[in-house]
Image 1 (cartoon, chains in turn blue, red):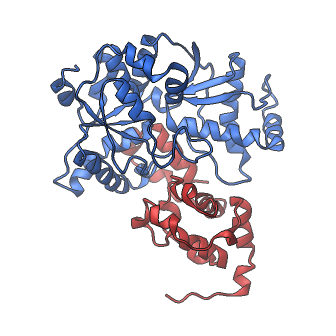
Image 2 (tube, chains in turn brown, yellow):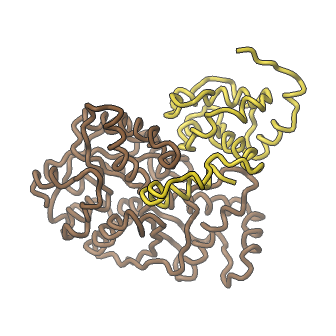
Image 3 (cartoon, one colour):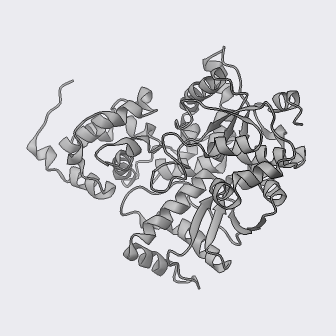
Length: 292
Length: 135
C-alpha cells in the first residue's frame, strides 16, 4: 500500500517529531508513504460563511496536487488539515458552480479538480485499511500497564457529516491504543474543545480548559493523554504551565501524539519521538513502564 | 436588562445578512437551550449561544456586534452537532464576526503580538487565529 501524504504546517515545524514518529511507524507496518509535492497550507480552518469561496481555494489546490501525483486519495496526520481539506472537498462536490468558479480562479493550473480525491486522516486508514489486528500483531513493544486517556478535541469528529467516528463517544483512539497494548481510560472530557487558536489571544482560556480536561483524565487514572491534533497537543502540553499558576494543586500530565505511541510500540528508536521537545516530560512515566 | 423589540429591527437588513452568510433559517430555533447547555465556552461569554440566536431573530444588532461571545466561540461545533432543529449556530456566529471583519475591524491587531508569542505558538494556531480574527 502506498499513501500520498499531506504534512501541513505544524508537523513540519514545532511538531516535526509527530511526523517523524508517524513515518517510522508506517514504515514498520510496511506502508509506503510519499509526501505530496508542492503542497501548500490548507488554511487550517474551514470557512463557515456561504459566500467565502476564496478560502476554499487553498485546500482544493492541495487536491489538485494529489491528482497530479496520480492518486485519488490523500492522507494527513493532522485533525485540522483533515477537517479543512475534507470539508472543502465536500463543499465543492455538492456545488458544481462553486467548483467551476474555483477552477476558473486557478486557470493556470494544468489539472482541473473534479471532486475526485478522497481525504483521510491516518487513524481511518489504520482502522479500515490496515486494521487494528494487524497493528496488534506487529507490535514488538506492547505498552504494557500504560494507562492512556484518548482526547479527540473537535475537528476529527465534528461536524458529523465528515467526522471519522461518533461525535459524542468516539472510540477509534482507544481501539488503537488497546491494539498497541496500552490500557485505555475513558473520561468525560474527551470531546471537549481545548479552545484551539484562543491560545494566541487568550492563553488563560486554554489553561482553564486544560485544567478541566486533564484533571478529569488524571482522576480517572490516566498516566498520559494521547491526542490526534497538533494544536490540541500544543495547548494541552504547553499551557499546563499557566494551568499551574491558576491552580497550584494541579498535577501535570504528559501529552503524546498517537503517532508517537505507535512508533514506540512498533519498535522505532526513542530518538524518533524527540521527547525532549515536550513541555511536560513524558520520559519518567515511560521509563517506569520500561518502555524507553 | 431592558431590550427594545421593534418591527424595524426584525426586518432590518442585518438579520437578512446573517441568514444569507450563515445559510441558516434563524426562525427554526425554538429556544430549547441545548446549544448553551453543551457549549464549553459559556463561562467566558456575555451572551449564551441560544441568546445569540434569539438576538439575531430580533435584529438586536448593537448587542450582537459588541458581544464578547462572538470572539470566544472557537467553532468547536458541539452546538451544531446537538441542535434538534439542525441549526448551525457556529455558522451564525461566524456570520456576525464576518460582518464586523469586513469593515476592517480586526479583533486581533497583529502588531500587538509579542515576538515570544509568535515564536512559541505553532503556525496552526497563528494561521487559524488570523483567519478568525482579522479581515
